Length: 318
Image 1 (cartoon, one colour):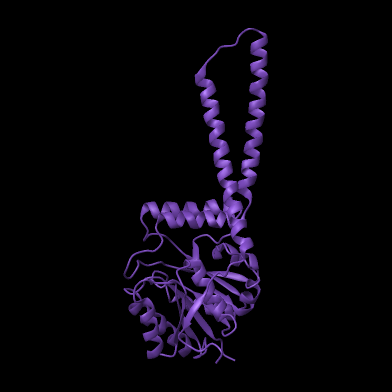
Image 2 (spheres, rainbow, N blue to C red; image 1 turned 90 degrees about the vertical axis):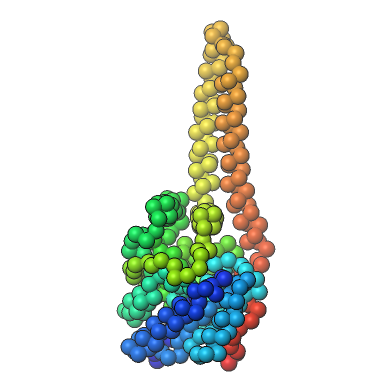
């Protein structure tokens, strides 16, 4: 039986780029079918993440033009990670492998062939990894590289320079479906499933059209979500830092008592104010980090659905 592939493509306000990249995805699918690497029953699934423009209308139009295009739309915008998850969970029972990739055309679509080859060689997960960041600005390149290093330092297991371009087998998705987290950080969660994996390296291009939906603020939010969802190391750092401050404070108390007994005390508001501000800042930061974890727990225990599909371009039962 030939391998059935599903390309899972999250879309949010992509009306400018979708007409162009959809043809690129279809050409790659036809090429892989022609080479006998996947079945003609393979599909390209667009996941509309509550777009405010005509993205969903374009997806529906594409599905009518070619049977290889299918689409689902979420009831509202839930974010990139939830959109990818929705597509993966929809595809896991119908296809042998999935490849998730963004809609903007920046990831090299031709790298899919190498991913499929790696799957046929026995790999269950294949990560698409950028070979360089020459197309990025100095600021973005520096912050992105720091992002991956910081995540690893904090205990989150991530593949360096890998985002959400990856191949996953249906077998892995079956196991991944048991991960019920509401706070999603897929690039750190997929490695936790295990199974044989490898990487395919590619050159990343400029965005074909439209604007990036991941500014610095969202990248920082994603990084913090990744750390707090996958590691308790920040709380441990706070604990050790608290012990260090307590030790220094204890030494300071001893020094103050000795100074008082020997008559060398000097009254001064500057040192007192500095110590109070320092300790106050440490306490507020510590409470903020702990509060973030408590907030994550609060969201998890609610068990709210991670995505809600309001419409499909095909009949799932059939």
